[in-house]
Amino acid sequence: MINYIWFILIFLGILVAIFTGNGAEISTTIVESADSTVKFIIGLVGIMCFWCGVMKIAEKSGLTQKLARLMKPLLKFLFKDAGKDEKALGAIVMNLTANMMGLSNAATPFGIKAMEEMDRLNPNKGRASNDMALFLVMNAACIQLVPSTIISIRAAAGSSNPGAIILPAILSTASAAIVGVICCKILQRYF
Image 1 (cartoon, rainbow, N blue to C red):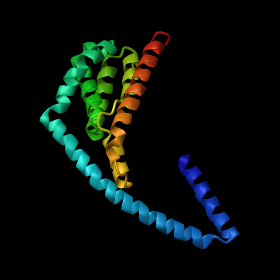
Image 2: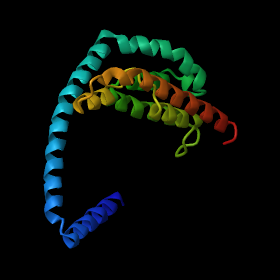
Image 3: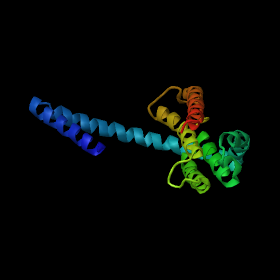
Image 4: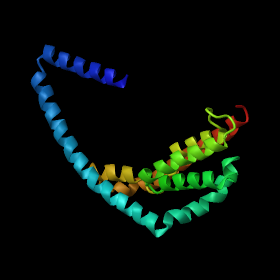
């Protein structure tokens, strides 16, 4: 559906440009924006490679494992069924820890594994359990200790202090995660 919307917008823009006599300006703008986009992406790729390397060092040094150990007691309390199953809880912990450290590529397989393990525990197959819904909310609103993607985008865009986003990101993602968990726990009582 979104492809149709974009096509209509572009098509109408071209028609308006032709009928108003601004076709040359539109062509120039398209070429200039393509050029600036390529430069931005090249800068972003370099910075993203750096942050992926830093995150891999954190993973290999055991920092993510230590963070996972700290999170385990809290997650056992939050997840009613999955908290009792070591396989499910292990996948949940590793997914959330990887997301917190900005390792989204590493987090995805753990997220899939966590959902599979919680589905194994789910008595109503084909319907999300309360633990599955809570995990989805926590995964979507995960606390970001190192928001490497945003830091990279800010650096590629020429920010004088790309790391200034760290504290606001921690506060905003923490508040989103807390509100999400509270809403899930309240709604679990009624649905």
